[in-house]
Image (tube, rainbow, N blue to C red; front, side):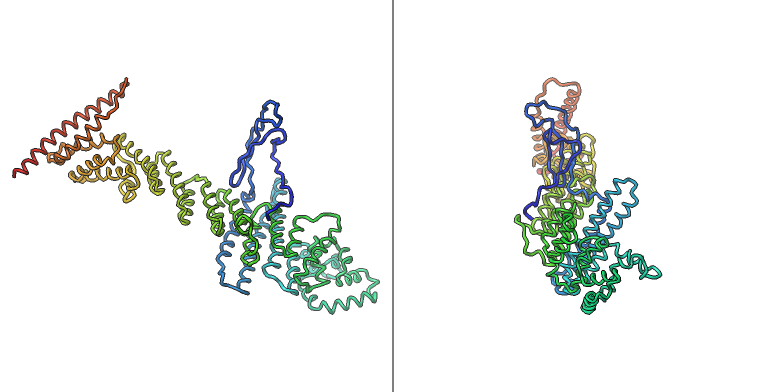
Length: 611
């Protein structure tokens, strides 16, 4: 699968003239942006207005189909069930389980095909009707190919039984046979029906015919040689058909809808016990005879021919080229891999064929706003490159809502994707800050273990406190616990809130010690020192001495450090002058309170020593 058989298909973008102007494009994980530039391909020509639109080109448009979404959702459950099949199962039990899985996949395809057919019939717009009919044809071809692969590769029908499976395969996919049988057998006298001689037969007569084929073959040869039915062209033609005469079969070509219908009919009457190894010869010759050189094989013909040749890799390759999405080849390859049929085929870039196709399919699912959740499980079952791919894709999921963000976060946490968890939490924290939801922002920054952002949010909390005089989101701050150790500023926020608790509970001595330690340890930001010193004022004015002389000296030192480093201002407006006056008044009040407290503390401590 490393080489291309031909040039890739050209995608025509309406309104864009790539021959006249240069193109500009940018690749994305699931789509590409294309636009026309102002630069002409001719060097000396002037810049001319270009196409004003930017086009989005998606590689997996099928994920946006409402009906095909059901195919993706239903098959996802089947895929997960297949991965859990016990590897220890062998022989018939394992084979029966794999066949059952294959039939489940086909039933999902058929259900979607029938629903799409009903939509195509009900479509009022002719263009939409044609589009839905085209999808019906594609789904029908997918089931046809899958059914054949099931017979040849999964069930591995032996000689004798093989033809019976192929007969059922043709009858299932050639609707005309069943409808014709119903018309003929439903008439009063079937033998006199206009279509009696055109009826290929049904399964019961074919099964009986297989058992007695040798005897009938000899009888037919004798009757033909004796010209027993020379007077009845219909009977003579029937004899030739029963002998497998190719010319006689081709005379009824209009009754055979396609070459593989001709193939199975030919095998029925010429070699009903055909061996699997001989199928490719009959398939190739039947295709050549049926087409007769009048037309070339279609992509579906090439796929079926490769299956009859038991060339699994060619089947997958042709399907990858012909089909419009990766669903079919990804699931079929995964199933065949579980049948131990692809073990020897590895790709040169380190991943086997199964994993490569699953990665491509999962990448397409991530382009959809809701189907990306299915893609996660497909990445999980790609042992080599699945985790790396999941990490790259999950970072690109737009986190439009918090509910979606929580889903993504849960997926990352379940898989220990630490970096992605941090990235998502940072994004959510930033959104919360922009919306002024500080509590949520702090919670996300703690969850991300981002010390820098936790510091930023803590500063916002402190700034709001200075402006409003109270804290928001008290429940969160009161229950920080060990999380407050994430950053110094967060530690300060938690401890400062603890100071308010102590003060409210009238534990003045503990509150004073904590307040002083916040300043002397330099854990409090310098911009907040004045607030802390102001908080100390009520404690300094208490009847009982709270701060000792030593503690009072430390407070006085903090006040002097703060005032001595106050920047020298130039010309100020009225508001700034008022603020400076207020600040000066606070400093004078603090100095007076500290001086009085120092005197009281010295007298108290001296009295205690004297006693």
